[in-house]
Length: 382
Ligand SMILES: Cc1ncc(COP(=O)(O)O)c(C=O)c1O
Image (tube, rainbow, N blue to C red):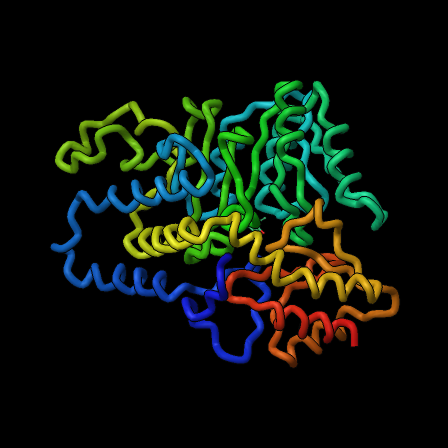
């Protein structure tokens, strides 16, 4: 079992940081990689043409390992989740009789592309809201999703967990249903990959996008995406030189190429060789792969169990364990508790969580301990 890893971070003393879903703190080794990246440009002679490609290759390999994808060429380096989804949306045509399914209060980067696509084609955007009940909420929500997927469904765009309260979606069943009706499954895994096990081989989504600055512990403005065979011959949203075949040959760059680099590399953002962000992201993924999402999930479950039990005893509501993640979960308050007052109280005690919708979102990691979560729970109750 993993132990506390706080010494690997530079989090100031006295702060209880339960907010990795907002953004992760920086690992010391990732900071170091970034500083080395900055220093590298002091002398451009030290930046060889090969280096435009080498870090990217390692990065794709590490991400492929993290999501259990056999072919690193299916991975693209992207600047944001919305960028990754834009490349997907750019390559799907809809009929006006078709619909796109999204979840209630889904994160905007995985909502607006589908709103736009539906407007452009006169198609329907169907939102599957959670039930109003607190009994079996996650179970019923998952059933509603499965029931909504029918022969008119062209796309299901969703997360692995809900970003605001960690409700866990049964992607295995959802994938099965989408295949039955011939719909695409596009996943925004920004709030799960890195801390919750995911397998491309197991789920076989058509697209998976991840911003890198949360559970993958990278810097801001870099992320990674997977594109399945449906997108093999697609058109990227930008036409940059490095994504074309033979771009390694700097002397021949104006022998203009029609063909792209293989697999999903056509979808990579221009200047993805980014000599500062790419090495940082690589270092972060190496560490995550060493820890493994399975153990991160187990650790978060272990340190949060007692505090969740205490909260439930005091009429706070947390989703059934089977239908929520352990790295990200929402707490809903009993009647009479004022969320605004709680926010002020938590701030005073240097406890960082987020309020999203009507839930307090708690998102621990390996730098947290059980006693921090217990202290947080007691403050909510008192
Ligand atoms: C589920 C989810 N997706 C994506 C993002 C970030 O999106 P983008 O990379 O497009 O800024 C967030 C940020 O909070 C998120 O929670």
